Image 1 (cartoon, rainbow, N blue to C red):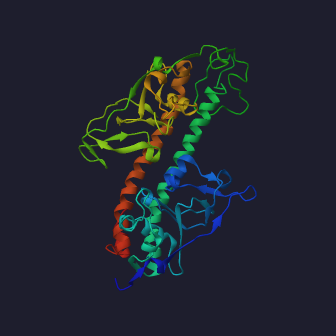
Image 2: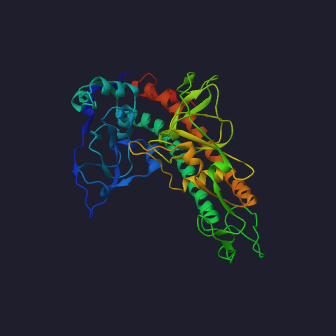
Image 3: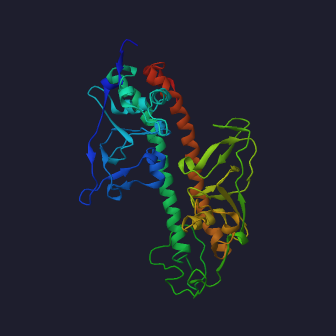
Length: 411
């Protein structure tokens, strides 16, 4: 490691403290403390600086954004765009001779998190202290080695993000088809006005049911196609409230604990570890019942729901889980209560749902099956890529694994 040298963090990185007061004339993407991670940015989008009123910090492409409040010490992000962020986020710039992506991965190590914890200040809301962090010592390689390490790790993250982008596009297509068929009621029909079961979008010049003059009838949800009806969620599905977290659980899957545990969280779709016995075996939908009320997820594998989560198992002879998933995503789901709102099974059982003719639901589900098979495959691949990245990260950053050795590793 002759090309490595010890530096204080303050010698290779500096804080960017460029203040920004939002106004209507200059609007930038805005990142809050809870959205630092790329997964959160993908789920919720990025706000606009005009949506906030207090002073923020400006950041630039390839800066390192690091959450200074515990428990956000592990959240770190390197944007490829210019924007503004919460003042509870450190905006860090790499100094000359330091690769900014390498610096990002250094901040992402468990060692950095531990040092941030050890030097944090405050009791009620501990904060990472930059003065402490700037004095910490790090072995840093020369610039070509930094660049090579960053390239290796970035290639894995880029593939993960590509898979995420594909999944977002497929989700958008699924929602667009749902809207066309079940909101605008322009599902494909033949010349006699009957449902014409073919996959995908309608051919050029062909009109859907409503636009071609299909008969509509009144309902509790407004005008709907003849032959459709409105029912209660509890009449077309089984609702189950999540329970306590099982005693047998692990943070990552193993041969025994391989069934996911889900809560009402948004990050990573609420994943809270793994257990040995699932509670829900059927393909179904979960809905957050407290905190993030109304956050809907499709669950295609057996799982265990815990508190603040409701599992909804559809009656397959009436609706499908993929139809139910899209229907609930398009609804305004709210809870009850004054102190802390919550969604209960009895209340949610009475939630109104549109029930189309089953042959239309079946065709939509058939199209969606191919979409979500690809989404599931990408998620599985991302889990494998993340595991590889997280294994390589500390070894590359510490110099335990030399860059030349990486050519023998298949990723």
